Length: 170
Image 1 (cartoon, rainbow, N blue to C red):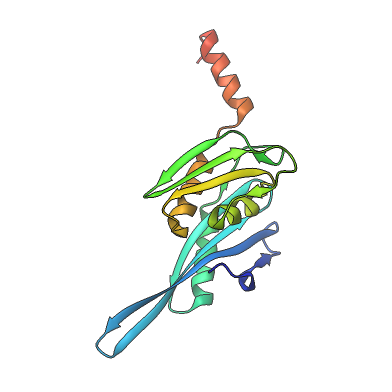
Image 2 (cartoon, rainbow, N blue to C red):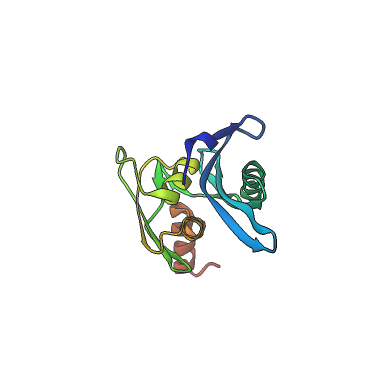
C-alpha cells in the first residue's frame, strides 16, 4: 500500500526525504467490538548514501508515520557507493525474506521492487539490480535490505586492509 500522498521532504535536517513504504491496519477484538491501530513502515534518506528505516505504531496513521520517521532517523546507516551504484554484490536474509543486490553500470537505473526500490531511491543509489526471494513481506524485505546495505564494505578500504594483512601489518 505504498502511496505517494505520504511523500514528504523535511527542510529542517539537511534535506532528508521521507517515504512511507507500507501502512498496515491491525484489529484487536475486545468486548465492545474491534479496536483498530496502524503500523507505518517509513524510509528516510539524504540521497547521498545515508538511509534509515523505521516502523511506527499508533492509533492514527499520521502519528504512526511520525513515529516511524523518528525511528528511521535514529537508525540511519551510511552506504559505501561507487559512483551511483553499490560497491559490490550482496545477498542477505532476514527471517524468510532474502534480498539480492548487485551493482549496475551507469544508466541502468534502479531495477528493484517494493521496499528495496524505496530504500535505494532514498539512499541516492541511481543504478542497482535487486531481487527479493522468499517472503514479500515489506517489513522483512526492508530489514533484509538494510542488513545487506550495512554489510557493504568500502572497496578501497577493504583493499588496503587486505594488503596490510598480506604484508604482515595489523
